[in-house]
Length: 283
Image 1: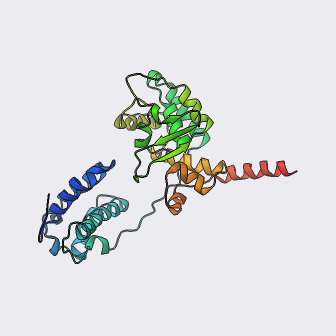
Image 2: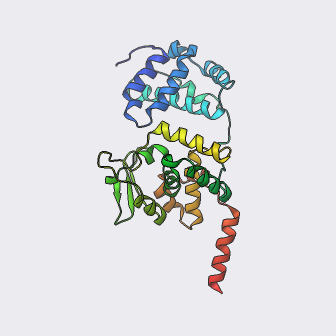
Image 3: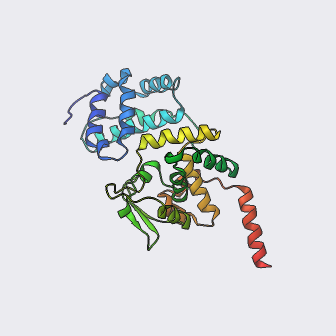
């Protein structure tokens, strides 16, 4: 699909999705963003007529129904699309209004940790699920700090049990990584049934796992806990074990150490216990 002259924003977004976003693992998010913009007059507006004022109007209308973080993601996606059009597609677009418009402020980091008491309730609630038990998947997610998509793509062929490592080929940022596995993660793998007709370690679909998690936390009475909080929990535990920032980044896949800090909320009581152990060794 080629584009010439003064075109609608929708034309740019459609080409961006087909030529750029579809090549990514996480293209569904971009598709969702484009569908939201399709409902706005901006979609049919010529790019030369879009300015900061018109984008600000879109921003303010969306803020009535969605969170500020959602708006920031939408503006960033469209801004990237226009930048591609300027640099790679040779379109003369003097101003990228989506980049210049003021972004709503929001607190991006969550401080949600799973308490010992909550974990006991989760294990007990999972025991009632019988054959649908999946607490081992939950615990593996914490031990590896994998994203949900990465977790469900883990194949037996990606594991090197002799070296205690796992290779993750498809990642959110496009950079494959090989991570070390904890003794507990290895123990979990030893108890997973190997199926000849399925190369994946965990035989469950993305949507199914999401619904299982919702059911589990409701049954356990655990409030305000998202699946992604398991990754947060895992990263924080690695720091509490004494790993350095580069070592944790190797596991989590963060290339920006500042981004990694957002996910880390160490429990003061765990630090106190560690200090006590270190003090005992020195005596």
